[in-house]
Image (cartoon, rainbow, N blue to C red; front, side, top):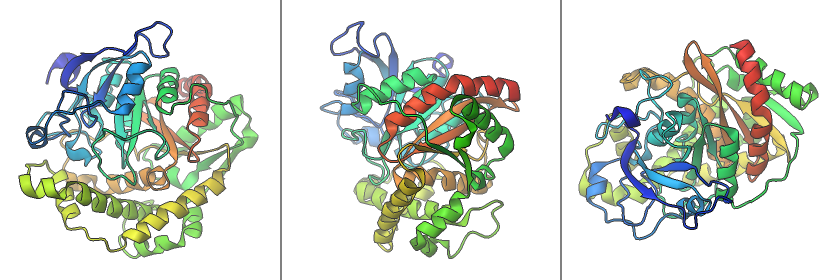
Length: 428
């Protein structure tokens, strides 16, 4: 691993802005892209050397990357990712694991590992990643930076290798909310976002219990900041699991087994995660079965098992999974209304240690996907906000807003963050 770049990069190159100007919104800023985006003249490696060897160079650059170049930023290279985007750990047995800049003995999170590390280590000002099941939100939390997963379909995924199209999004990382917002304006193709104050701030109290960090510590920091900025009358506690179970009755099909034995399991959200993973496996197989069977690639632990399971997935219950997506989006739109915000932990706790045995992460992963599947299945936008360190390790909270409210959410973060950090400094 090259110490100076934290092992974040697959390859370095320079892509200059298409029309350089000091007046452009990202003028003078640098960025990197996950090795899942097409860049004209380079092979898109998808985290695996066999994939790299068996595919030709891209003939054009992904529109998302072009949007950023047109905005005045300079791309300095492609970043390492988990193989075939099929992990949230950030470990890659072929290319090495990018070093978490906030916790070097811990995993960086994946699959957009290198993109998160490059931002966290201040090697670039921001970076592009993708988020299907959590691949921007998780590494953002683990590396102590901002990570934004946009509303599903809000940013073009053309020129991006698909993982599972029902969930794939182009997301981005930054160290501060101003850059996060500027990048969002370009990717969402909205030069200005209308300013609206939140009309309600819903804290999912059951989801808070999935975190090993005391919920009241995280919640209190946020409540104090919201109260100072917008007023305490906006804050309400909700039991999200009960609400989802009531409004999406078809989830019962995925609640038949497997909930017992998980501390603080939320049955409806565990079911939601299962439905997401089933549809993800199915779409992954449709996308990549031919290549997997032809090339029989060597895949790392955890990923090889997941890919094998995907290859065996049939279309049984796939229509049900798709209907759950629609019902959940409707249910959360009704809950949040136009300018409501939902507050949950991004992940169940700090980043696990490097080289932790896959079997020991079973409960952690189950809780993580219960949280990650809320935006994943509904297609809502979500931002992971860094809240400094707790016991020396990065912690975060996430805010979600209804589908299509990306600009509103980016404005809320921009307005709230300075007050939030002041509260963190007092509490942590």
